[in-house]
Image (tube, rainbow, N blue to C red; front, side, top):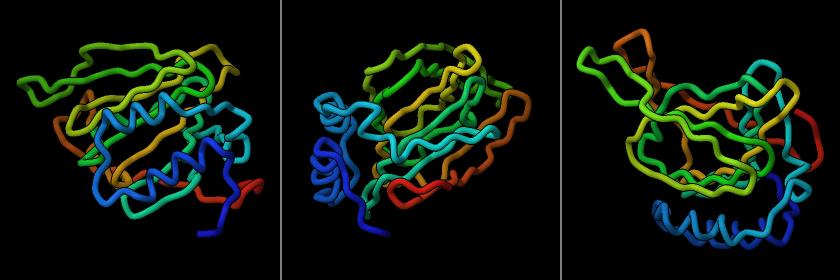
Amino acid sequence: MKSKVLSAPLASLTDYLNRLSARAPAEELKERLSDLDVCAEDLHSYVRFSEDRYLRNLICEGPFYHLLVLCWRSGQRSPIHNHAGSTCGFRIIEGIATETLFAPTPSRLMKPVSSTDYPEGLVNASQDAFVHQISNLQRPNEDLVTLHVYSPPLLRMDTYSLTEPTIGEYRPMVLEHALGSGI
């Protein structure tokens, strides 16, 4: 991977991430992201959108993490998924994210059990097998930008359907690009 010049807050976070020798604990990721003095300007070189789907833009990586900026246009959603063994910590940089939690039914289909809107600045972290979906349900032309840490890197996840009693596998596409370039 090419060397990138990171803002001071991101450099501090990546120093911690580069010292990991195992999966990061959820509470520690949440604390580190909460203490992080980062704004949209610090991430502008990594903000890329697609009209077709949300994008996962790689800032940097190591053996035990991916640090990403996820960019969502209004109406875009992740698949219904779990994190398949990765800890996820995230911070809302711009916009409002909606997280919907799901639970299996006796018929082996998934049903939504709760939905929460997360405002700009909110930090959260989780791990293990909970099933959820992240969405940008804001008005048209209102984007959502989130900063995510996955430890270890989230290279695959189990996906679920509201209409089929099967579990699929999804390998999220991660976009890597040099500082300041397009995709």
